[in-house]
Image (cartoon, rainbow, N blue to C red; front, top):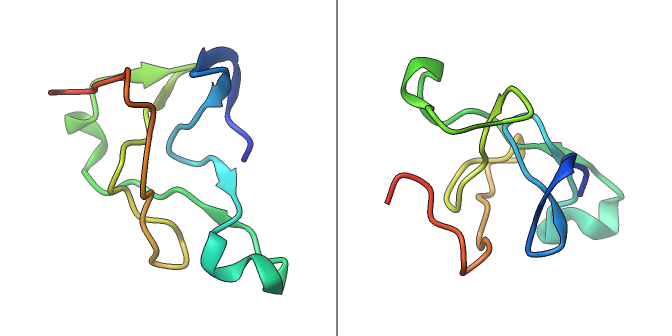
Length: 77
């Protein structure tokens, strides 16, 4: 997964809306996906590198969802 390399969450680049990732359901197809915005931009208030932070439950372009995140990080909670 690619993310914002200047911000690390649990040692990984922070995932944001627009992050390119590989969905485990499609890894055999060598298909990449992008995290898409689930909520209209004005309601996404946490920005990382100028982009809305990705959250557990956000949808990918393949319609799968982000299944987990860093247990030590809460956004809007």
